[in-house]
Length: 335
Ligand code: TXA
Ligand code: MG
Image (tube, rainbow, N blue to C red; front, side, top):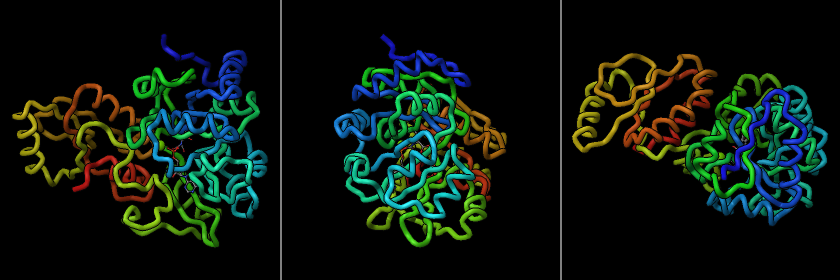
């Protein structure tokens, strides 16, 4: 039986959310929509429940989880210090696609934070996530509801495809609006550090914080890794993904020919129209927020269509495309 339960995304029905809340309270797993991507949730204060997340996702125990809370006050209760930077960011950008890393209180199990002394906190804005946090009365640890290193889910169907029989319930609130994971900022140090770019832009963060450090690339070569989301291959489809520019046309044409001769199927995310013998070309919007909203859904559908190679036209080298550039780079095979 499908574990999917459809809820009204704008006005979630209390009785349906209560069902999900009871599962969380009993130590079970519930997948639910946030404004960014779907999360795989467990009671963040229950180490045994949190362990199930790692098992189901096949996630390395060294990769810490984000804890979702109902509001900034609930976030404050889970940390030892609440700096001015957190107060300002929380006030301006929560609820929303922003995660703050702060020194943790001891009631948060080490399992959640992978043994780190800090915890990542987020107040999601999606009404279903908000209702679930409010009705359950729990902080909810929730990574993206996909298998480790694969594509994040932006619909309940993506979750079902990846984890279907391993979650007790999937709350279906439709497609998510932001489409890529939250911006993560480390506030445990003197100078705030951007750990993961997202749709909250650097200039927005700079305007609020005054100063923020952006790790030089390639961050994933650095030890120890400040955030496992910085691991090189991540957010990846099953097919090989290659980034190209329209100028590389001849090279790409050869690549498509070779793939077709091998009996492979080639899909593409394009910004311009190119005369190539592609089985599954998809035209993407030339606007960053819309591109982000559609990116994972497009890659999921190319995977479902059996593409063996996905060609992705490089997006503009502009600040508002930074998070998309980051995800595409990680999804691409090195080289
Ligand atoms: O938009 C999102 O953030 C989604 C939704 C479900 O909220 N969640 C998500 O979770 O993307 P996940 O587990 O896929 O990514 C969590 C990121 C990882 O890069 C992880 O390394 C980082 O947050 N993180 C968590 N705790 C941390 C900590 N204490 N210090 C540094 N990085 C941390
Ligand atoms: Mg993830």
